[in-house]
Image (cartoon, rainbow, N blue to C red):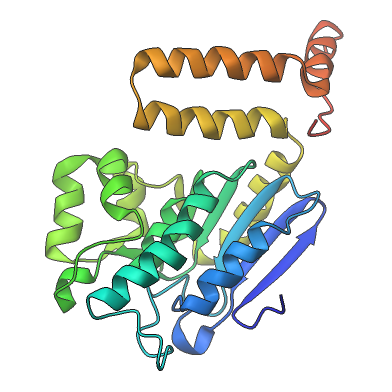
Length: 260
């Protein structure tokens, strides 16, 4: 697939997907959702994924004006767009077998808020903000927002975001514990790069199992989670990285993980 709305770069085992429609504040069209989904299948030897936006926005939400005869609003059209395009993209991101960093360099609104919050590490610049804008146009949150937000910030704050439709700044989001960190705008790229490099040099298989087990814990009870942990430990314990980690510990040196 040739990408027209995103840029995919893989350098030093760090994959970066840049949402690249800056003239529309990177609004996520159906084509962009397709391209993101396709890119997630083409990460090759990457060991961490970074998602950011070109220009002055992360993602301003679904692109309501780009579809022509493929509308994303209006009852059945919205249902089809969500079930066939946006929802599969979100699920693929959540089930990815590597850490995900999202760099919020401006508004993350609507489905863009969901894409941003899927990150294991969400870093926002001080000009970044999160917005559940649906109520302002008589719609309801989607893209997994009603699943994500109560788990991140609790029912009261999630309800506030959804029903009042007010901007939550990067600083406020960090204060709520909704995101990993808020940093100065001019420091965002460097902070993301440093974190991505650290994760790319870590035990990738362990990270993948951690992501899976966190979802299990969020969706199931204690017994299921305990079993998932045991199964995950069995898998991780048989890896080359675990052997290297144990050897490095005994030799009192830093482990050199290969991601296998």
